[in-house]
Image (cartoon, rainbow over all chains, first blue to last red; front, side):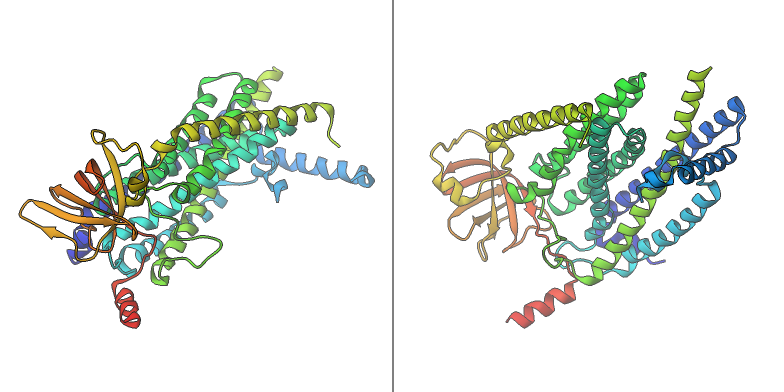
Length: 74
Length: 236
Length: 142
């Protein structure tokens, strides 16, 4: 590693904080979003004890059936 | 295309799929950072401070686009009462808000060595600050107002009013004398950025758009699950 | 085409639209002087109500060969290629300040031709390129 990479012609003190700030705030948002999703999934599973994925499949099938039955209206 | 945004479809987005997307994102970001910090040359006037551009410009762009989408979703929501529109807008808001903040902070860090000041009240910077305020009020209406219908209405109006600010931000550098320089990349003419500097910019653009899409998908899924929980609660 | 409900909502939105455009228009008309971040020398020259006690900003290009540096002060000419204003300033100028480049000075006018600045900001343009390219461009122009 050479030092020039960190000094960046005297602009390092501005360039590095800019990159670090962007990176940190993006990471924070990502972790927060992930955490929130985990919490909501847990609430859904424990309180209503219905696995999400199965429900979708049935919902999807129903939709298809409905579509087939009323095919000419679309 | 719009159909894949239907609330039931998003639930098939598993954590494994998200992880694949994140792996792609990390790869793009590493290449982008290598280019923007090491491979790309310094500017002929600004020296190495030009590297701040590679985060500043994409972040500002996404901040504007996000609010534009919120505006469109708000109009669809108020006029046609499409159920999942508020969920879309609500999921986009924190992304746009974060990028607006990044844009202002990196811009400030860029302004100090080049202009000689952290902040000036010129039209571009001020209108960007107004955008941040709109984002914050939009997010707060959802947080503060418990009644979904009420929060939905008020936030949609904020979304529409805030959209008027977008053309002001975009064209502020052309309409008035500002300290901020005019756009380097426009639809109508060749970019005024040398191609060696355009490469990292484009890669960082791609990376940040990918990042936004991932966050959007995660947040949208969260919102859909929340809605389902609320529905169940009301049934009982 | 749309139901009555949807039509009434569209009507409401269009009204909101028109009203907010009107409001924004009025705000910007009244703010016009403040929205403009700086005046060019020509605008100062044409201005009838120049105030000499109020802080204003003037901007333009630093005229080539006009910079005179002394130990702690600097004098130069701001030009918009039509009119010129002499600026004097005490203190350090930003790195990007150089002849032929954009500049914004904040301070007070002494008269229409002379400006005492207490802050100098460098304004850069939208062109980005590596130094080699800029040199090559200069050579091909000469």
